[in-house]
Amino acid sequence: MTRARPVLAIDGGPPVRQKLLPYARQLIGEDDIAAVVATLRGDWLTTGPAVETFEERFAAFVGARHAVAVSSGTAALHAAAHALGLRPGDEAVVPALTFAATANAVCYLGARPVFADVQRDTLNVDPAAVEAALTPRTRAVFTVDFTGVPVDYDAFRELASRRNLALVSDAAHALGARYREVPVGSLARITTFSLHPVKHITAGEGGVVATDDAELASRIRHFRNHGITSDHHQREAVGSWWYEMRELGFNYRITDFQCALAQSQLGKLAEWLECRCAIAARYTEAFGGVPELEPPTVPAWARPAWHLYVVRLNLERLRAGRREVFAALRAEGIGVNVHYIPVPWHPYYQALGHRRGQWPVAEAEYERLLSLPMWAGMTPADVDDTIAAVTKVLAAYRR
Image (tube, rainbow, N blue to C red; front, top):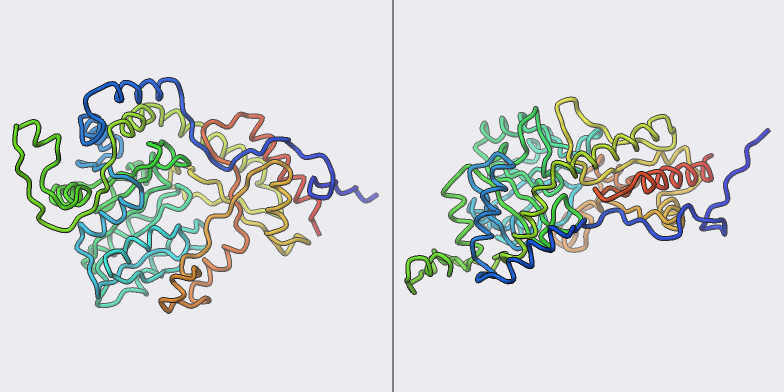
């Protein structure tokens, strides 16, 4: 007897849940609000003590000697590229499958991003593909810990050392992740993080650059403040009005009340990472035996931070494409998303001469990617609903 297919919400059936469950969102508590209010009632709203305190605690958390807070994760990438001295005529290798900001930061300096393909298992950038993309003009390699699973840092550190390249880790997904039990943030020459609301902790908007190199940290501090060698807080402390602009910088400062929020959240990060790991474990257990879907792969040496939980659809087993599955899941009340459109597919990069078909793994895998809800505030019922909706939709579209 053939089992009846479920009637999907998109076809008029009852949805799994009435209110859309977002794929990610911030989690703000009364302690976070109190920390921000206390700063607003203080003397400093920007370039003050809350920024310095947050930087010190963040550096300790990620195992770096220096941390510099800036206005966004993109500003962190731009500052890193600037500190390394990228300039017109230089090249930097970046993953083809990431958010556009990773490559954009290279372009901001007039340098050229060269896109490398990703590995089939983790979707992290492939060390062999990166090495194949190197030219005499290559000055840096930007890696991305996709979804919060660390890249093979040993392979990239060896490559960077052998070819005299700067290794930059875009760890926007990986705050709290570990590679062979070493915190992400202490493994590359420069590591950048994001404090956007969908990330592990938030400042509203914000970013952090971590490094063990005091000279690079100093350059980044100047860069975030117009290229000026001191900020108002420092001048106030010594009773001086004098300052010097020694290079062209940007206003990438972050406020004290943003850092108060981020610092409050940092104290809860360990607990939130456990929540994310528990959600990922539930998903993996539920979907491990589902032939229409492929859960993420995690190498034995990685402790992911699980910014995203990205599955891949086995489209040959479905009578619908990713677009139809996406729409059906959202109709069921599950706010799935897709991460990411390959960067060289965007019109801006197409206009620079990049052409589709050069990154076969990234391009093929993109066509079947789907991000499920993943954030620390999800309840067990939210996870149950996601699993139920995915199971329902895949059953309806099964060949």
